[in-house]
Every structure is written in structure tokens, then in C-alpha cells.
Length: 572
Ligand code: GLY
Image (cartoon, rainbow, N blue to C red; front, side, top):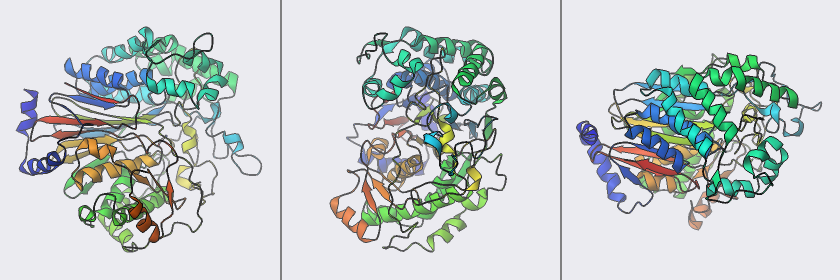
């Protein structure tokens, strides 16, 4: 029946479009199909939680709330209650909105708070230790989304997460790898973290062993019973503020009580007849994504061939220009009322940007060849589509993988180090990738600029694809390339999220590429145009999670990036 509803809205253009995609997707092993609803996330367990909510009559927002809380238990590296994020929504009825639950700077924060007397960042303090923690927004944001768009009772949506924490689940390979690998020294540094991540004798849990998180279960139970007050007030707020005070952090009970999530109008662009909806500031993601798509729209990318040297040259030039604008203009809109959004999103701005792109010569961001700070796989994204076609694209984060690495004593969750997303050194913008521009300097109560890019592509007023990824600044470029893979290169969603990707962010003037993304010939040609090319040293670029709605066949097609160890698509 639900499948029929999907079929009922099929249009000729979509039929043709998907016929093309399906033609290429026959053996797409990474694509999962379902008819009635689907969740794709970086944790198969959490995807199944969301799928069960859909199966028992919940809508996409209900499933998103349940999935997000479940991820806080099963993917503690990025799923969270101690961080923040963004949700973009496109209803089957055409309602389009977004929710901003980005962390905020504590009231005691200021623009110079991390600087030593020489004006340098003191001991990496914007990323390490309790001074790096922003006021968490996740619980407020999920609650606001639920109040606006949810249908099932809040308590029912938090319950699966409480049970996963209380009763435990089989430890995943992803968590095992983290607990035994290069993060071990960080986890062992803080007794409150060691207690959760290791057994009482200090030994680690084996994959498949039952892993329980009792403090987290109690924290979630308070959220379940009291809503946001169970987090921002009362026992949780008191314990968190006390932990901060005892250990040199800034967040107080007043900071927590004051936190509010905001519903915002998504940014909108068009690309080859498709509508693109994404997150507005304080994310840079949507604006930069749409600017890059606008720049690329006038080239025949399909003809150039996927990841050919010419194609990647033009994609790089679009990235260079999008990221330059990111640095110059973007920050928290509540503190930067003058952001020229309309201009940045316009076709005329893209036209202007194209005038200085040469077809075979790289432009220069900076002549210095510099080391690019490694952008990891931090953050996590998931996508949900329900039986009516309501679609959610949600990315949230605690910044680094496991944030600060610090679990607040007695609360069971990791604290973010999101303050590192502010520009820490006012005025210092350099070839190494340090940005010191004004819109994203630290101020009390301000939200730090983000790159998270939860996006929904639509056609004829209907959601068509939900896509997003983790990966710091690489997120925007990952989402761009997955969209191009589908819309220009006709890939199915599985191929589109798996294909090799590149990243350029204006400064440093270096393109980082996944080794499998370019042939040796393309690398040679690309370098001959004047691009600086560096192979990504480890891991992949992001972990894209996406769902395509195939209206022609009445089928949902989802893909969890295999760059993610524990991810999966769950449909029914
Ligand atoms: N912490 C990653 C981002 O917000 O872009």
C-alpha cells in the first residue's frame, strides 16, 4: 500500500531518470532495497532501531529521533547527546525545514581564550581538554524536531536507546578497533572514560562481548522521562557543571539552562532541474555545496567522464572558490546578520566565479605548498525515508572521533571538542589551513561554523535523495561528489557513495585524493595542470550515508558507505 503511494507520485522525468540509474545498478551490491521505509546510518544496530519505529507506524522524524539516541549508545565516537548537529526535512506534502542544534560557546568564552602570550594556540587547548567543550545541543534539537513533526510519544522513541545502554549490545568491531588502537592512550588518560571503555581490570571488551553503559542509561532515562529538562536542568546539568568546575571547564548550569535549538529555513539551490535543500549557517555546508553546484552546472561533466583529470580539475576549481567564500563570509547568522546569502547562492555569483577558471590550468589559492591538516572521519550522518516519502537528512557530531575523549563523571557520554571549529587565532589566515576571519571568531553564546551538510535533493516538489557524510571540512566535498555521481554520472546510490573522492579547501592549496579515486594517467594529467596532489594517508574520505527514492519502481534504495565499519541500511 505504501509502495503504491510512492508509485502514485511517479513522473515521466523521474521514470527516465531512474531508468538510467537502474541500468547501471544491476550488480550494485552495496545498495539495499526496501518498499516501505528505510534508515541508513553508521551503526546497523541504530538503523534497525529506526526501522522498527517506522515499521510500527512512526514517521521519518520519529525514526530519526530514535536512531539518533540509539547512535549515542552504539556509535559513541560520533553519535551523541553531548554534541550538536543539524536536521533537514522534506515532507511528502512539500513541507521543507531544518533544525539547528549546533553547540554554543559558553558564556565565559571569548575570542582570545586559547592564545598564549605570543598569540599562538596554547597546547591545542581548543581541541583538547574541557576548555574545548561547547554547550551541547542534540537533546534540544531532537526534541524540537519531535515537537514539530513527530507522531509517536517521545518516551517510546528514547526507550530503545535506554535499553541498548542498560542491557548492552554485542561490542562492534568499530568500537573494538578504537578501544584497542591509536585512541587507547586518550581513553586511558581520563578515569571516567577508562571506566566505560574498559573492564574493571583494565582489559578491553572483545568484539561480540556484551557491552553495557549504565551511567549513560540513567542519563537517557532522565531525558526520556523529562524531555530536555532531563538534560539541561536537574541532575545531569548539576553533574556536568560540577565536573566542569572541578576540572577547569567553563560550562555552567546557566549555560545549559539557556541553550535553545532553532528551526531555520534551509538554503535552496537548483542543479540541472533538481532542487537542492541543505543546511544554512551556522553550517557552511549548504551554502558552499550550492555555490559549487552552481559553478559546475554549466560544464558537461558527464562527457568528461567520472574522475577524469579534466573533470577533477573543474571540481577542484569549484571547491577552491566555494571554500574561499566559506572563510570570508560564513559564521553564526545570529552574530553575522550581514552574511550575503542571496549573493552566494545565486547563479550570477557562480557565473562571476567561472570567469577566471581556465579549462586546463589550475588557479592558485596560495603559492606555498603546505601540509594539509588531516581531516578525519569525525561526525556521523544518517538518512531516513518513511512509507509516505517523508525524508530526513541528519548529521550530528562531537567534533573529533570521541570528541575530547572525556566522559563526564557519572553521566556516561563523551563531551564534544566543538570549540575547535571556531577560528582560534583572530586575523591569522595562512597557507597551512588556519583561518582567522571575523565571522567565525569566538563570542559568548555563539555557534561555531560547521561543515555538516545534511542535504535533500528533490524533483517536482518530491524528495528524491537524502545524503550526508562525516569528515570535517571534507564533508561538503563528499556530499558534492556523491550528488554529481548520481545526477551527472548516472550511478546508483551504492556506487555513488563508494566511488573514490578528492578534497580541496582553498587553503592549503593541495588536493588530497583517495588512492583509488584517480588512475595514474589522470594523476599525471591533473598535476600537469598545476595542481598539488597528495594521497590521503589513511582511511577514506568521509562515510556517506544515503537513500534514493525510486518513484518509478516504488522502491527505496539505500547505501551505507563501506568506509564505515559498523554501518548499515535497514529497510522493510
Ligand atoms: N565538527 C564538524 C563540523 O561541524 O563540521
